[in-house]
Length: 183
Image (cartoon, rainbow, N blue to C red):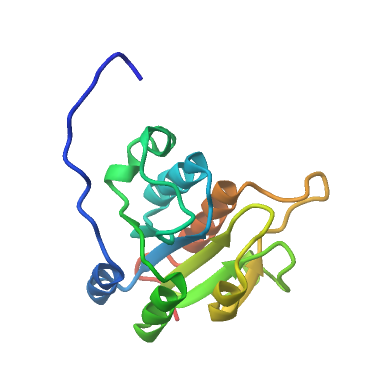
């Protein structure tokens, strides 16, 4: 920190229903889901990427996800205040609710059969990313409409989860411009 201390009020909690309400007023809504990502700096970096590319929210399960602490806020570089961090009790139920309201859920996995750039990305899109090492949990994976991969060279085994989120969000922005053709 810079030698400054502030006393602030907690951030106003948001819900999956808030996302659905926003999506009803916007043809384009993208959400990042982090399935049990435990590193607060990865969550913060995903929030920062979400802010950079227009994500409406980052959703992470209430259990096995870090609280919004100073480390997360620092990694988010201000995005914690602009991109809601939604913490549902049941992640799969939240994904099902989003799907029932016109969202497509794309899971990212390095072994997925389809390259992200080859996928027909929808205007209402959820990118689900799992914890490094373990990836998406089974039920989260089964809830996805499509599994996609970020193509990388063989020089590294995988990307950091927040880097994968940034790549996916960039590809969504590139593929679904405002006023462009969407699912």
